[in-house]
Length: 359
Image (cartoon, rainbow, N blue to C red; front, side, top):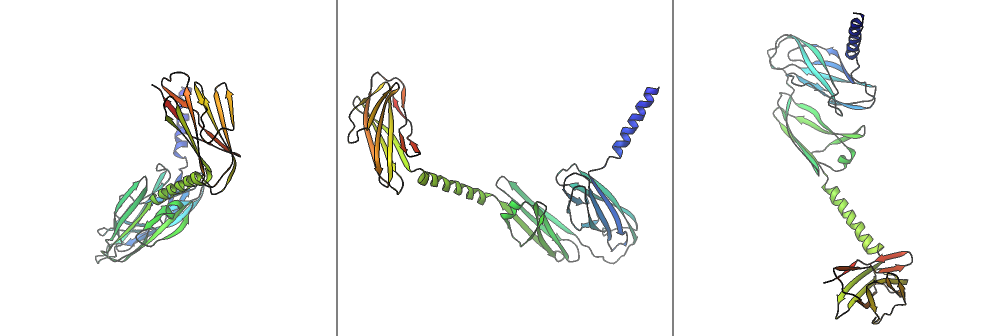
């Protein structure tokens, strides 16, 4: 029995601890004017408390309410362990009786939708006026499209009340999106934490409709990035690559003709240029070099290395080196020849690989 009693006490303590756990976000409402006529509006002071360890932007709403609920700011940034105050105006629906009413208000984190809280504010309607009262309300139809390369928003706002509706349409955008924002109307921006609050003014006569459209397109950024990459590529290929080296093969009668084309791609004379090429085994060098004879031929265990040296290469000058090889045995399959190498100071440029296709 004692053990069962101890277990019950433990469960009770756990339940009480869970019940009194501090919510990440709290909302408190203080009445400023909660007793109104049917053609008036009640006002409350709202205090939002952020118990989290980080700054959060909280969104206020009055879901499924028939009352005209207007917050002084629908999005409120509250610092960590801090609080913010704002006001809310509540106008009753057109058809209403005298009595006390509870209006549901909700607050939610824009970073974590599971972090929410709510509050019921109580308004007393003391007298119903038969004459037409001021109705301040709008309806909004929206068209939102978001894709990989951009996003666009279009809102048709209609004044469905019977008085002039003056307010602001706001959205929160990143600093990057602001730089490429396009809108059909003029707008103002103010810093909003690490982001930016964008505001469009609204002034509508009863029955009047206006359209607020804005878009963020990443295509200019993408095209600009591609053009920048192209410019870098052209710069590297045309200015940083001082030389070009091309190695080609041509099948002859019993021999293979090798052409090595080198070119000075700059507008400057280049000095002390060296070209090396290796003739691998089982290929043998046929010593018919045309007009350019190698400065040296070195036999290695892998084949023969031929070296040509040039004191100078004039700007845009192109030189073609030719020699012939033949195989000491029948080639079956493909035989890949090494790349030719050009060296000038600390610069080294290689030709592409070439193959001999056997039978």
